[in-house]
Image 1 (spheres, helix red, strand yellow):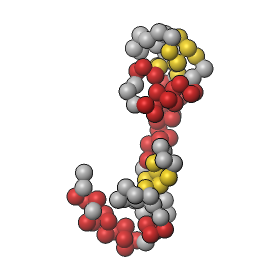
Image 2 (tube, one colour; image 1 turned 180 degrees about the vertical axis):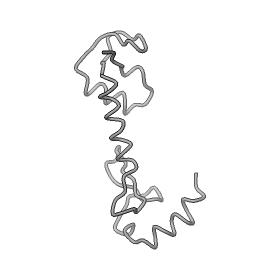
Image 3 (cartoon, helix red, strand yellow; image 1 turned 135 degrees about the horizontal axis):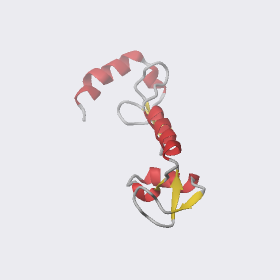
Image 4 (cartoon, helix red, strand yellow; image 1 turned 60 degrees about the vertical axis):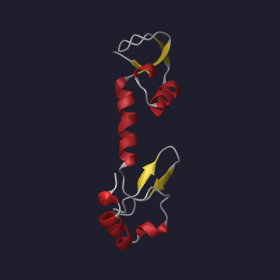
Length: 104
């Protein structure tokens, strides 16, 4: 099996995950780096999928809040910490119609 390393990626969270979860040090068959932490692409893929699932999971049946893994909290549609107010359907609906719809 081939393994990838932290040098294969620019994203700091992915690099950190590889460094913290690798049990193998060696030469990367993908980028050719030597003496690096190696991880199975399958293991890394599972981690990345779990991150994506968290990023797009809905709380309380479709509030639009997203999970911020770095801050370990949910954020509302406006990017601020989600609070009880986002459980209000009317506010959510208005946020989507008038705020998120035209924001990039």
